[in-house]
Length: 461
Picture 1: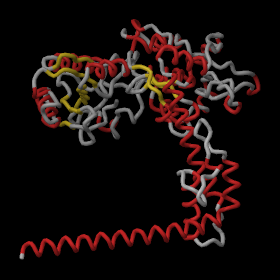
Picture 2: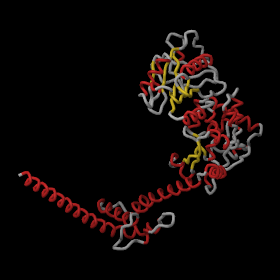
Picture 3: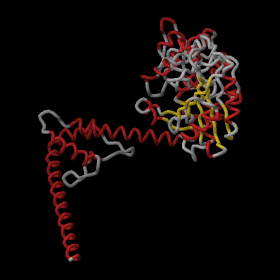
Picture 4: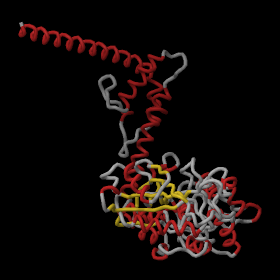
């Protein structure tokens, strides 16, 4: 969340005194109009801020309620009350952006501390050139109105401590867990590489339950950390966190956020704890490399905290496997049936696709075959092998499926290779028959309509 929404206004980064002043003033004003108003707990050690986030729920009057008043009008009402120079309404599920004047009594004294966030998180282009005070400065406010208290509470939880969920996410991801803007999910390994969204099974959106499951103190979560090291120690307290013990001469190296061993999948059975340092930095996944570039706290976690813990011999033991975490999620959240059903349905859909594309279509030659004849052949083969149509008056043995709904693909392949030409002839006959039936039906319909029209004309006469 950086202050980069207004390309035509100068919104420099705010030092802590400006941030705290405007945050306090804004909360006081907005709290008059909503039952719940707050701002997520900020990350520790920030030298400056790109924008200010305000979360709201429970509008007290219609002018502040997007369910009763158009969002554009609600945004305008809030903007004028806060003295905004400009505002952006945003899409239906997005927050509204306001640009309010920089307080006159506070100069822009942002610094270049090493903890600054890098451009892309709020710094506008050419900020150095404009920081001399010649151009009017503004502060970006991002105001989010949530329709339900559950959404409001979840966002307060999920957005707390800035980069902490980036850190925890890189830890729990290797055990098949994901936390996003909706809740905690368990991923199905067979599906996630091909369709991540379909692989995710919802577990819970209760913050206390999530923290308990990860072995973290729920009460401590809602208190500000005094330093980055304190936050890192909290994150390292996650029961799934462990650091890869790098061996000499590159022995035992793995992805810094690599996969935990998965039973039955030898290709992915690697010893892959968090590596950290320069070696780990090179092996980061794409999203984590982006975080390294843009998120200084995450970079410090990878480059400093993890190597230091390794040197001290801390967190070198993996205490759980991905399968153990999965089974614990089954027991705690009762999702085994959904997990198994989704996996079974996924495998069946993949099997059907292989049956059609790989076996039926893939076994009918393309060279020196008339395209129309080939199309008739594969359509007829699909009808008799997959859709229950008859082959010369009888069902095919090759069309039978087992208890999981699967075909014997090799038996089907042999049948297709030996009978595709006959299927083409039968398919052509079937198409001709269907075309004649269609023409006959159209003629009958036309004759019927003509008869009705004659009767109507006679009645009028």
